[in-house]
Image (cartoon, rainbow, N blue to C red; front, side, top):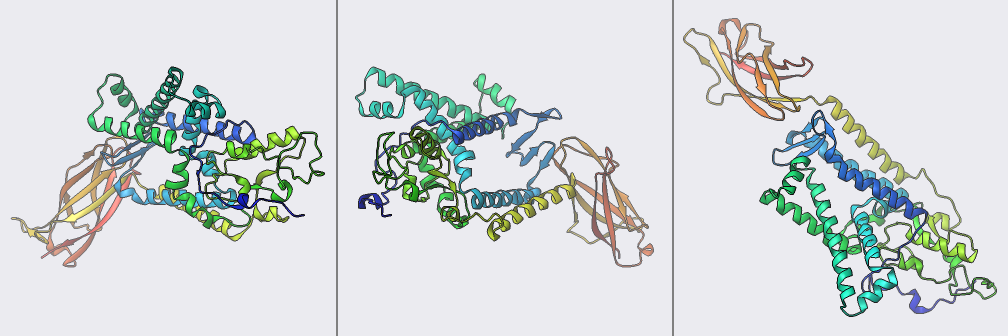
Length: 460
């Protein structure tokens, strides 16, 4: 069968060449999934800073104090490894999902997409349907148009301000943040960051919209590297759909030489990126499935089989089957699991105390008035818990030596304290000029919290 496709339809036109994108509201299976998932993610984002844990905020990223607290786990700059593993885990998990399901992250869970569609929902409630919004923007500035624009932008600004404040609650205790907001006592730095994030949210979700995904975000550019012939993508069945064209509902389209595509253009009107999926795979596509819902509605009205536009792999469209055990997918999945195991192993081996020892740089040793050899040290103790802990210092491996140090050293939650200590011994009781010894630091509140660090003792 030959398709009589016009030459101009074969040309992939420049992105957004016709101006602003007016998204038509669409209902359907994939829209319900995205909307429900979006609500869950937004409510989770807002609720997390309000979750209490042991009388404190469960998640608090205190940049000023260089402490990240996550449900009792305090991460300090010395714990950078876990953050590196976390970013690597997120990257490989994204690669795995992309190779399997395409850009579903962009279509269903990306904050830019969720907020963009939320702003679009507000716009539709204030200014009307797609055709009404187009007509409104082309009309002159009447009182009614001014009212609608002011209401819409006011709602956008309120959402942006609330979003920015919710985001800042991850870095500033939520209760004090909102209390200071209600009493107009925000500091200059807090006000700066809140209004900056609010401005970015307002601009990204309200104006830039899909341009953030297609122009600014690098993910759309390198996603094709992770695709293969078995990746599930939003795909148009050209063999079934062409030759496209309008027709009456009860007409025999096959007798007219037409395919199942009625050329209603709804798949383009509902697309957040403003593309025509019938032109084939395009990097602007965020795999959201809105065009599938729109096309399925049209197919149902005409009595045709659904799935003219569907999630399918290139092999499926060629009549084959999708291979779920392909090497690239297994590789991404294995690396994701490996990094997850590495993180769990690190967390299990992590101790809530970190200790370092530094010898006196001025002298290897000194002899006191009693003829005993003294070696001075400075112990640095970091308390990684969220409670005040009292530490006791002892030495091992040098039986002839005694330790001069405070009996108990209190260290506040998340704080670092330096303790000067001195080890004293009779030089005649030591076998070597350089002797090994261990400092053992133990928490009084819990003897299981202990750390051992090695050093050396010099004699004359």
